[in-house]
Length: 585
Ligand code: GLC
Ligand code: MG
Image (cartoon, rainbow, N blue to C red; front, side, top):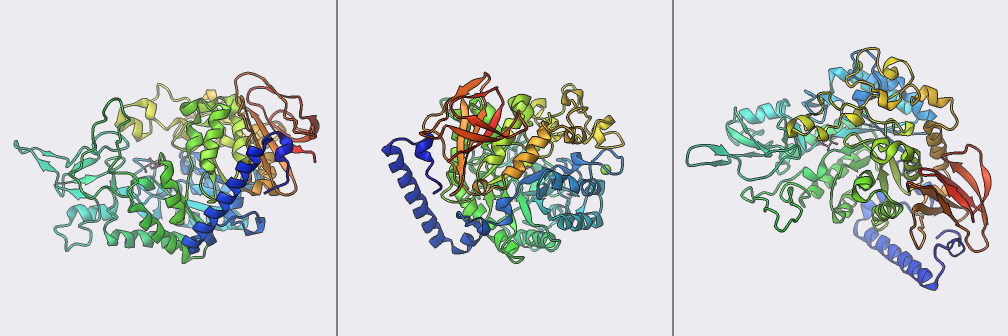
């Protein structure tokens, strides 16, 4: 454990606390030893320890998510593309980000903007060509930037050649016969064909669709144009394995695995999801999510990427999974995204106690490597969900927590989402579900690069307009570069601070009692830092003296640019204000 500041900080004054800490440490060591013995090959991948030099690249990085459609257009068609991304690579050096994750750019009819792939090893024309992708890899490597790509294994587009083969297959002698999840359904007395059960699609309505060509139902967890692959069929695994090898050979550093909890459905399709009783939450995906067969497949994918060395990274999109599922993803050789901070406002008002609870749950993974996310292409931007005032504070939190942080493009500017109320939705989720509130258009608004018309995103007509609520004339990269106190410059500074050894550890301590201000300590053997963030809606005054430590150096503040020695006994923070204080010895 780190330097003995805990007692002094008043975080942990009693013997009871010291004793608890001891138990926690012993418990953690025991758990690590246990896991080490059980899964030796995984240990190599996920061992972090206290020693920085043993950290893998993905443990030291910030992941930056690019939604290619909205990042930078190069050809004036109003849709972002690969060449656009290449033209912006220097930006990542500027913000000290050295890993980018690209949402899908594969051939697709774009019914779900690329999450409906019609060819896994070809590039959608609207995004460019395979040469553009190769150039992107080359330019990224030149700058030391790692590239993670989206991998959408759960379903393909119904326009994929595989689906075409499968719907035309005559019998099981055809290798594509069982490539998707087909089912004859039930024929009623009056001759009507109905689905075999009441399973629902995430995007609304029955998850079964009668295919007019094969005259059989197919299962789709998402849109009807996104048919689920049948992972009980080894041929599917073989074909998907080829896709993984294709991209690994191109030198990609990792895969973000889309919608992984939906990979399997119960074998027995006569099972209906029970109706909830006494106001219980319905267990809508009881038979279609979190099925135990998932992990064997993830393990196989881990083996495949290991053919290319032990350093390739698998990041699993595990939205809305129960806590008990997380260790299984780690054991299978992937890191499950921890999403709960995204919903903090809705879940529990994003108070200090709420955030601390979510963070602690995120860290409750028996020595595995943590990760935190505050935004993505499926959820409102932080400035909208939490309020603009808290945007910098949330970046401060994200970048000072243990583990790997993921930043969604534009969040480093504290950028708001587009205001598209009253406009027809682009997002098919909103259209199919008939609920405009489901639209994900807002958070997919174009990146704001400068104060010119269309914010430098495109010379044409952007697929989603830049709306005035985002204040793009001020909230844009070029303008913010010149302002020391801008969200962008705060983010850069935080990205530098993250590189300090204390932030590379997973050490974190919370105070005994949570107040209205989020407080935690990050430390290593040498140095201890206090992170203090006022997430409340009114100003707060705090006394953070700890024994004989009464002063520290404020090395970062969302409000002041310069470092300053400050009195710990009298810390005053406006709502949304946050600081990092290096504790004096
Ligand atoms: C994931 C993606 C989402 C997509 C869905 C279906 O949840 O993040 O954008 O719509 O999968 O592919
Ligand atoms: Mg374009």
